[in-house]
Length: 79
Image (tube, rainbow, N blue to C red; front, side, top):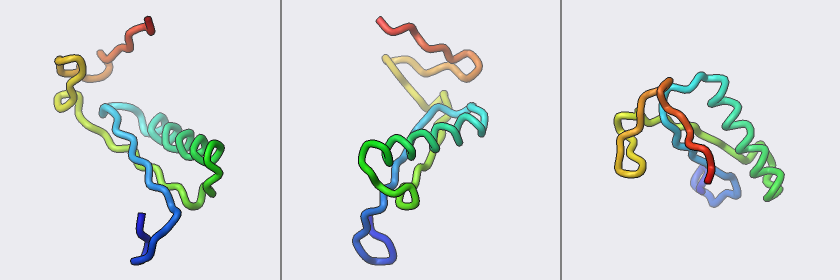
């Protein structure tokens, strides 16, 4: 990543999620991702930027099927 025209050790993490979740959940996701990166790699949290980007379910396909809109989205149990 470049910052002010110079190479930087700052980190930009993009989290793409399906739209429709409450703001508090999106904020928690961003905070937890930042904390995990900091814990594992030691990067100062001041140098970590996390962006949560939403995609509508109508524009998201998994397993060859369009995903349902919340609140009808359910997770399958792990096998």
